[in-house]
Image 1 (cartoon, helix red, strand yellow):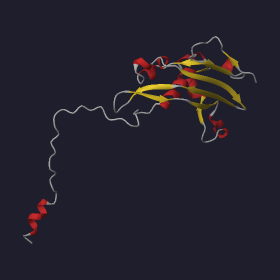
Image 2 (cartoon, rainbow, N blue to C red):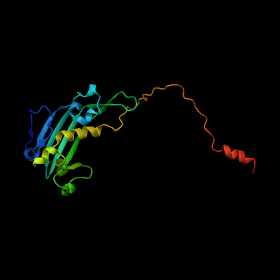
Image 3 (cartoon, one colour):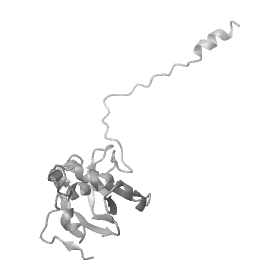
Image 4 (tube, rainbow, N blue to C red):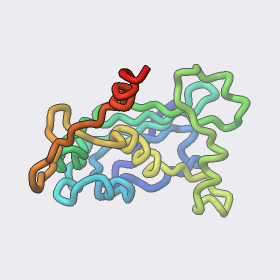
Length: 187
């Protein structure tokens, strides 16, 4: 089986037409930036939104299964939730998503493998209303990048960005057994 590559596509395509590429395979490689993904814009500070991330995508059939492999090399910047300074997050990793045609194919997949049901994935896309089978490649890439960013990103060794106003007056804690001490002599 020969893989075809869209060499002329300098920008990551939004969708891959499964009718065209499912049997012969599809691959794309290039650079993506956080600026290309709407949900990453909320996480990545403006000055880091053009930092490139190398990406290699490959869609191919393995037996009865359709497999999407994504290989990322690069970093994403976020804001540390402790010190509020930029935080570099390494997103270098490989991800493999198995795209199942039918729910019955789950028995062909190992428990540890990540899989998606194509029927559900394609139904979520408004572009597929005409009966097309357009795989939302850009959305899947964005999902994988978002999984690398912690919910509460923070440096391993930083102090909280807290400005103290005034002195903290330490109050002596009331002893809950003080009332018992007064009863001690009466018994």
